[in-house]
Amino acid sequence: MIDVKTLCLGVLSRDDASGYEIRKEFEDGPLSHFSDAGFGSIYPALKKLLEDGHIIMLPQGGDSRPDKKVYRITPAGRHVLYQALTRQPAQDKLRSDLMFMLFFGHMLPPRHLDRILGDRIDHLQRAVETLERSADRPGNAGEKFVDGLSLATYKAALTYLEEHRHELVGAALMENKVAE
Image 1 (cartoon, rainbow, N blue to C red):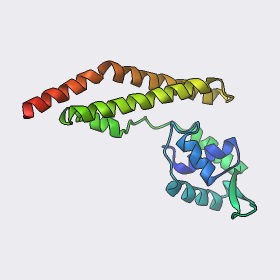
Image 2: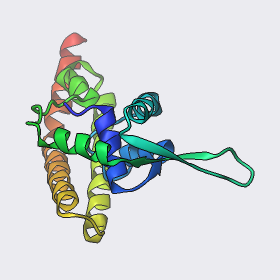
Image 3: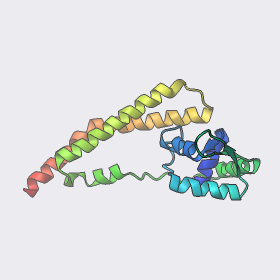
Image 4: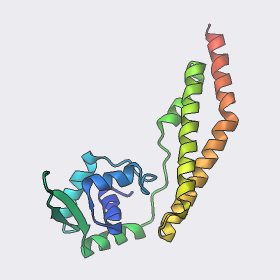
């Protein structure tokens, strides 16, 4: 399993970055498909990477604000990242609040269920549009491959939800009629 330290090394292998910039890569950058690493896990990981000599800190002076801490991967850090990348990956696990809610969707009020599904459809449409717009952005072969795989995954989920939404909402309608 890829841990937050390895995720941070991956970001830093692309360019020097602050903790905030690393977080942005997981929030809405090209690494947003992999992890939702937050500041609560990023900063302890950076501290440990510094202690282990896998990164260095480059303080950047600011005019009226405190120094910005920018991190850079070291050759030792690149070696650790390479070692992590050459291991057999763990099997993917789909962990999703939406999937849990839909599993019990027949128990939800139909309007609420329909709104949840509609919101996810809207989200997926925006994700597809974003990935399609970024198809021509510069990037290495791995980044382009992952963007393509992500686009295919989002399109498949979008198509499924659009084509089968009525089935689950209909089941919720039936369940509510029986309960009355």
